[in-house]
Structures are given as structure tokens and as C-alpha cells.
Length: 204
Length: 204
DNA sequence: ATTTGAATTATTGAAAAAATTAGTCAAAAT
DNA sequence: ATTTTGACTAATTTTTTCAATAATTCAAAT
Image (cartoon, rainbow over all chains, first blue to last red; front, side, top):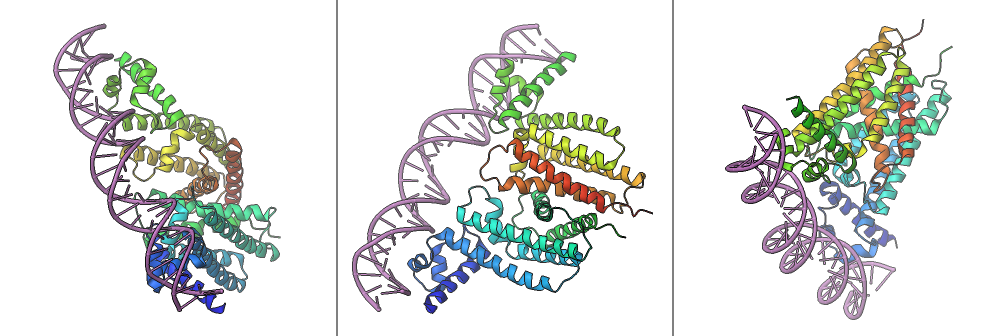
């Protein structure tokens, strides 16, 4: 029982390494099994199919990141600072897991339900995170916001979309460079800053 | 000579109808020729190849829209109003020419240089349009902006990206509905409004 | 309950064949 | 001289086939 969980975890970790480096399409179940000296069939004992394993990897990786993020976020009182912090972490995450996420980015259509579900969850969590920051600002009297949820969604849409728009211009580039991610981060920060300023409560 | 231009225009218009309805891939040169009862060879007398014709259609359609837009924009003094006006017109344009633009949206990679050039031009023009609005705001003392060009780019990135983000969620949808476009417009307006407020010059 | 080797089923990718479409050109029409 | 065309070729796309690879199942062993 405890051993079973251990095997599951081992598979999850080996899969994470493969998927993170080679992506979904270029990773085979045999390879993951070989990495662990398990039989391929064992993978199917713990995970129903390849997509489920991939989804589990996505979920695991994201959950860990969110956990860490939320913890660190607690100690930041100022909402502008918190927002900049989140943007830094977001880009760091995307840079690190670019290949892993690639499938979710390029093949959003025709994504198996399992993965789609994980991505939706993660989006919801991210919106919640941003809403938390805005809430902070409202509580301290820094911000005045009517529709907290919708405003958080708008910010996330704009951030995600901004990355899309910028990366889309890069013709046939397989992996964006560090510089390109830095540029995205820079513009996202400027946008978020102006946006927060626009949400500022009238001073009195 | 004047008759030659007329033929060119006829071809351009027939091509516009076809491309606007069926897109680039699902329109053949023969069909355009048949619509006009011209020979296919004649199309090649006026346009070097299919891509050039498509690019000409894009350019024509966009040029007409920009022209109209700039004219109407002149009579709007307030920058907030002007921004809302542009957003309305942008969405109307995209709704109308969704199929025509689809290729530019989905196949941004591997886009022939001619089309890429038209799209870049249009992006530049759009940024210029937004910069013009911001300039208006700065002139009237409503806004305080350091980097006019970059700020305009950020706004456009966010607007375009926002549309991407929202449409991307729609799994396997061929054509977004009117409602979906309306939702995009609504969120874009909120974002732009907050953003402009964030750029407001400190009152005194 | 866990693990495996061997077998089956499904998917992918390359190659060949067929069909459609883009693009050319010499000659005809204006 | 310019415009237009029909008939032709070249390129591209689509369809089909088939072998190789990979996913998935399962009976039997641990």
C-alpha cells in the first residue's frame, strides 16, 4: 500500500522528466518503463493510459508550483509587489516547463478531456490567485473594485494573450529564447502596473 | 488602361467574396475565374500568383476599413470615447472577415512573406491608431504617458491576446458566435477603460 | 496485490497512386 | 500593342496502402 504509492510516484517522476524534456508525442511508454527498469505493463497498472499519465504529470507539476507560490505570496502585503512577484513566477514556470506545456498550447483543440480538465483547473486557480491579490488591495484600501472575479479574469486573459501575441510573431521558432521571455515579462509588468493604477481607489 | 483597372478590380472583388466566405485554402483560382466568366489565365495576367491575389484582397479590405475608421475617429475628441469606438469597430471588422483572416490567425507560422508583410503593416497602422488616441489624451492633459509607442503596443498586444485567449477555450469551434464576440468586446472595453484610468494624469 | 512476458490492437509514417489545383505559354482576339 | 484564352505542364494535395512502431490487454507468475 505504501509501496504502491511509492511506485506510482516513481512512475510519475520518471514520466515528468521525459515529458518535460521531450513532450508528449516524443515520449513513449516503453522509454518511461525502461528508465525505471519496470515493465511497460506496470505503467498500465498504475495509470489507465498515456493521456492519464500525462495529465497526472501536468497536475502534479502545477500543484507543486501553486503550493509554493501561495506560501510565498502570503508574506507579501502590498498588492503591486504581489502582482510583480506572480508575473516573475509565472514566466519562470513557463520557461522551465515550456516543452511539457507545448501540447497544451499548440493543440488546445482536440485535447483529451482529462488534460483539458487539468488546464481548466489550473486556470481557475490562477484566477483565484490574482483575485486574492486584488482582494488584498481592496482590504488595505489601495484598490476599489466592483467585480473582483471578472477583473481577475480580465487580467489573466490579457497576460496569457499577451504572451501568445508576442510568441506568435516568432516565425517557426521551436523554443523561444530567454530574451524573448524577458521581453514578455517586461511588457506584462508594465501592463499590470498601469492596470492596477487604473484600479486604484480615489485618494482622500 | 482604364478598362484594365476595371478588370483588376472585378477580380479583386470576386476574390474577396470567395476568400471572405471560404478562406484561402478552400478557394481555387478556377472558381474565382468562373464567378466572373473569365479564363483562369486572365487572373494570372493581373496577379502574379494566388498568394499575391490573397494579399491584395487583405490589403484592400484593411485599407478601406482603416480609411473609414480614421475619418470617423477625427471627430471624436475624448480619448476614452475614441478607444471604445475603435474597439467596437475592431470587433465588427473581425466578425465580418473572420474566415478571411482565419489563415492569418491559425497559420501565422509559414505565412508567405507577402501576406506577412500586409499583416505587419496593418499591425503597425493599428498601433499608430492607438498611439494617436493616447496622443490626444496627452494633448488635452487627460493622460500622462512616458513611452507613447510602447504603451500603444502593450494595449494592442493585450487586446489581440485577449481575443486569442478567449477564443482558444472554445474547443473545436469553427466559427465563434455573435455572443462570443460580444463577450470579447465587453471584456476588452473593461480592460481598456481601467488601463486608460491607470494612465490618467494626476489631477490638480 | 503486484508484476511480467507475450500477444493483440491501434496509431503513425512513409511511399505510391490518383486527383486536383496552381501556374505557363503560344496563339487568337480585340 | 494589349488583352484574353485554351491547352498544357508542374506542383500540391488527397487517398490509399502497408509496414513499423507504440499503446493497451491479459493470462500466468510472483
